[in-house]
Structures are given as structure tokens and as C-alpha cells.
Length: 434
Ligand code: UD1
Ligand code: UDP
Image (cartoon, rainbow, N blue to C red):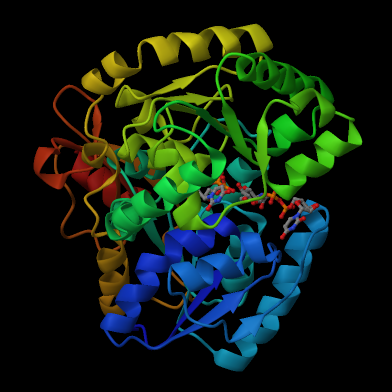
């Protein structure tokens, strides 16, 4: 069935930012859509400011679910979305990223037999203690269309059994956003620097908000000690997520950060401006790792893994974990070697995309033939997997799941494929193996 109407679901800061290019293109292509905001983020600084700056449409529905435990938040979103699906009857539901809003949208759509499309599919940190990793895995598992931002993300999906016919490599929409707003961000950044009395490339920008960093008092204390130490030698600017401020306050840690320039969460242009002029950035954010990569700002990621390995491969991002001394040493090392790091860093657009992700996503959504799930009435008793030297064009029920070059390395590009991992009925596959 071709797509007639799209329901776009979002609910947090990064989703508002990263879905903007998809909205721009849905509008340009005249595709019918309805926008549902879950209200997981509700403060002006975490929601509305992005609607205004990035020209998002007004949501038709605001579920206004607000904060809660993972189960409470996801369940409330699911209950609200179920009603919205009944009312608007979209032919596809789209969501971006790895938040509770996304997993709730994916599950609700799947249970209502409405095809689900996942933007930023296939990212994996390989750490299932991260709530976001569970959200990504579940969303991809039930998605009918997986918009993988990079080749590595596509390869991850293949190895979780997502047939390649469902995977579309689009690039990351954050590249489109940066292309559109780089100049405005520079202007806003200059204004911010004036206000804060800072010189370009003379300060360290910090953001942290991850559950594993903020809800673990030992880790949070270690991070705070590191920021305090760094701030004695170089200005540190820290626009803080409300979650982080709450935890810092709860542990009486705000006083230890007296030399750090603590700011409220910033609007997008203001934040991107501060990032653009930072000497380096210390972050546990996913989106900030990508933006810093694109703006060539050396990055120390305050985590032990990243679902954005491309930024590390590009030579601009380093995982430094959360131990105080390691962070301090890595910070002063990065400040000293800043020019060298930048000089040797690769162009991140090679890894993250060229700025046409929004267009690709909107066009695919407009043109795709998405099957409404139906019960499997085949009588072949088994589905199994086999590696073949060629695809199986005449095997109606077979699907290509992954492709490899002659060395055995997984490839996402069909022109490089020499071997194919196929899923299909045992009897059919046996014919091809003999
Ligand atoms: C969520 C996402 C995380 C994403 C981040 C983007 C999940 C599991 N986590 O984390 O992946 O990186 O958004 O910023 O979905 N709060 C406010 N005002 C708001 C929103 C939140 O004060 O507008 C405070 C509340 O105290 C709330 C806490 O922040 O309890 C955490 O909010 P929540 O939505 O649960 O998760 P985030 O940490 O924002
Ligand atoms: N951001 C912002 N203002 C801030 C901090 C971050 O606009 O004060 C933007 C940042 O540019 C990036 C996005 O928020 O695009 C990242 O959101 P966050 O770090 O909350 O979530 P994550 O990307 O880790 O899911």
C-alpha cells in the first residue's frame, strides 16, 4: 500500500532538532502528515524554543505526558498514541532516535498494525544497561522502514535480521540542520561570547545528562571534581539539562562548580554558536558528538562506549569515561594538541552524511510501498538462514538479510556484494544450496 498520511511522533529536544529537515521536506513535497508531540520534554528551553527556531509545525496533538519512570512515561505515551492512531488513521508512523517517546511510538504502531518508520535506525552502543539502547533495539525490531544514518548502522541492522529491503541509508539529519544554520549559529555564538566575556576557542564547553552519569552519585561527583579542576585553569561553560541540575542540587554539588559558568539549557542557535567557538567539548550527549564532529571541535566523550563510532573513526572524538583524573589529563592534552587534532581529523560528512537526509527520508516516505502487516498463511514449515554466492531471484519468500565482500566483511553496498545471507523457507534454500 502506498503511504497516504504520515504521523510524525516526537517529544524531546534532540527529536525536535533532528526531525526538522524531515518536516521541511514533507512540506516541500506536499505530503500529508500529522505531528504528535508526546510532551516528554515540556520546559520551553527543551521544547518550544526549537519549534520556533527550526520552524517546526504546530503539533496537532500534545500528549503532555511529562516526566516519570520509564514505564510510566512509555505507558502514558502509548495510551495517548493509541487514541491518536484511532483518530487520524495514518498509513505510517515515523519517529527519530532512542528516547522513551520513540519506543512507545514503535510499539503502539506495531500493535495497531500500522507500519513504523525509524529515523536514525541501527545505532548501537552494545551496552544494554543504557535505556536508550533498549529503545533503539526495540524500535528497529518492529520497524518496517529503517532509515540508517550511516553504513555502519545499516550493517548493524543486517546482523539483527532486518532484511536489506527495509534499510535505507540516508545520512544523519543533523548534517542538514547544521548546513542550514551554521551562519546564524556563528552570529549567535559571537553574541554569546560577548555576553559571557569569552574569547573564541578559549573555553571548554560541557554538557552531561545521561542517566548513567547523573543518577550515579559516584560518577556525578567524579565528573564535578574534574570540571572544577579544569575550571581553575580554563573557563568552563556548562549549559545544564534540568535532570543534571536536579541531581547536582540533590547531592549539594552546585557549590563545587562555583568557578564553572553554569547556564540554563540554551536555544539551538545559541548552543551551536557556543559549540562552534569552543576550544574543546566534554559531553555525554549523542547529538553533540555528531555536531562537534561536523564543526571540527575536538571532543572528549564522558562515557565508556558510543553508538556514534564514526565520530571516533574521524579522529575528532575520544572516549574518556568518567574518572576525574583521566578526564582532567585528557582535557589538558586535547587543549594543548587542539590544532594537531583538528588538522588530522577527517571530514565528518564522509561518515555522517552530506546534508540530504531530510529529503531522502521524506521522498522515501512519500514513495514507499509499505505493506500493512498481515498474518502469515504460508505452509512452508521452516524459515532458516543460508549464505549463498548469489541472491535468489526466483525464491518468492526469500529475503536478503546481509551482504559480504570477497573477504567476508559485511558491506551495505550491493555493488560490492559477493556473498549473501538469505532468509527463506528451508526447502527453497536447500534447492539453491545444492
Ligand atoms: C531523555 C532521553 C535521552 C535523551 C534526552 C535528551 C529517555 C529514556 N531518555 O532523557 O535519551 O538523550 O532526553 O535531552 O527517553 N525535566 C524537566 N523538564 C523537562 C524535561 C525533563 O525538568 O522539560 C527533568 C525532570 O526532572 C525529569 C528529568 O528531567 O525527571 C529527566 O527527563 P526524562 O524525559 O525522563 O529524560 P531525559 O534525561 O531528559
Ligand atoms: N542542545 C541545545 N541546547 C543545549 C544543549 C544541547 O540546543 O543547551 C542541542 C544540541 O545542539 C544537540 C541536542 O541538543 O543537537 C542534543 O540533545 P541532548 O544532548 O539532550 O540529547 P542526545 O543527543 O544525547 O539524545
